[in-house]
Image 1 (cartoon, one colour):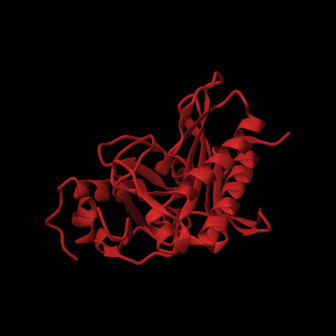
Image 2 (cartoon, one colour):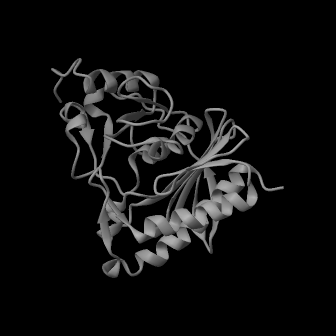
Length: 265
């Protein structure tokens, strides 16, 4: 029988294939604006639809929460959480850094997460207690999986490698940390770079549960930590910080909250 993590991978890969079909003709894809001002396209809705079809066929009694189609009820205490295209603003510009995100929450705890970067042919995944992994997407399969770990270095915040997302708007939340740490450009979603040891700290300045659910299992399984700026320890709305160690996370949160903001590089 297919495990939950295997199902999450299959659903994410199905969504990735659908997303790439639309990405290939992105110049002709109509764009709309949601009430919150964010961009949405027919691709976002189509990707979520095919992911839901996979999940519903395999686990018909589970609930599903998706960014575009809302929540369907279930009676099992299990809920799949979908962000069909994370980074639609990147997607519509032809930037290859957008993702497909899927997570499974069981009785309020995220137990599995998958993040695919379709246009780069890369994927990350984790199951609670099973470690975190990175691999390549080949013929709609994840191959060459290798276990990933956060960096073992313990830098001072002034030399900590920082990634901030988004890259060109809504960065005010992260400005106190940007003024202190060594911000670096990123080719892949910054929390994933923390998980694989290529960054020390990452900040996502806004989001909803579907933006953070998959990361909330991948980061800890790689040895890292995360928390919302308001202290929340489960994925939800608002800005979140990710770090390679609890000490570094506390320093980052203190700076983001205005404490120790006098520090300079």
